Amino acid sequence: MTETLKANETLETLETPCVIIDSALVDRNIQVMADAIKQHQVKLRPHAKTHKMPAIARQQIEAGAVGITVAKISEAEVMAANGINNIFVAYPIVTPSKIERAVRLSEQIELIIGVDSLAGAQQLEQIAAEHGHSLQVRLEIDTGFRRTGVPYEQASALAAQIARMPHLRLTGIYTFRGSFHAGKATLDVAAAGQEEGTLMVQLAERLRAEGIAIVDVSVGSTPTAISAAAVEGVTEVRPGTYVFHDRMQARLGICDIEDCAGSVIVTIVSRPSADLIIVDGGSKTFATDVQPGTDPLQLRGFGHIMNLEDAYLVRLSEEHGMIELGPLAQTAILQVGDKLRIIPNHICSTVNLHNQVVMQRGHTYERVPVLARGMLE
Image 1 (cartoon, rainbow, N blue to C red):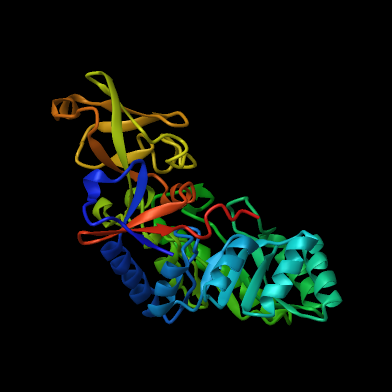
Image 2 (tube, one colour):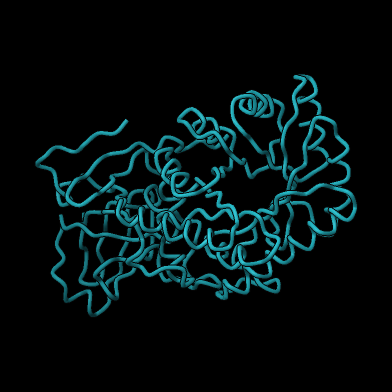
């Protein structure tokens, strides 16, 4: 359900802090990625973690995506309840209650589940067998990010064990590697994507040679999707952030800051000194998972402040954002009550902090609930 803002409300009168999304930029970002991936005859399965809104997922599918990716079964349930019928849960589901939910959902839609351990696969097999049902699974591979995923060199043994389980259909392998190349974080996203795709294609070929029928090789994030899709043998990519973009993607060279569809509108609530202003957005408004001053991005502050060249969101408490003003920003006429627009470092985690966003199309503003917000289980 959406709620159109009152006719006399404008961008200037919105209550803050709030996330505002430029619909025209969303349209363009969706189409640019769809066109780029289509050139390589690779499937596009966007990760819905960025927007968490079924309406945008439908828009991505209408532009050519085969389905969507989510991280949690609760997200999948929200998306399925709103008409999305092809979903990949790219996350290990290991607890009986969640597996039960996955079985029920897979009876209604095409559902694929991630697995990365023998223990997890055994749980899936046991519960699927109890229901007389088979589950489609993909084996997650750790290609260097050191998160979930079976270690690359151990993948063959685990894949063989899963392939022998009668109620699991192992149809593919997948990975998340991010902007890594030769074992290090990098700004060379083209090289990172090519290496990611090559590693996974080589593994798929080895598994096939061992008699394991791997169909899908699923890779790629927003930074690496296009270069990974160019690797022969890759069948699917799963970018997410591209739909809105953010400061992190701009730093990686994936977009310009003007391509960022998502931003946070905040109000100046205090100006204690010439070089400091306080805004009403803190850590409950802005994601803090992409920390300033870390490799490879070396971002300064927690977001890009539009139209203030040397102003930096340097510190956050729960409800306060502290912005340091350099010499140029100090000359701007900034007063208590003024609004600022900030592109967050990471838009995905920022959106998840908000119950709703404001969709802007021209001079029309519409409140839209983030239906899968907080769906963490």
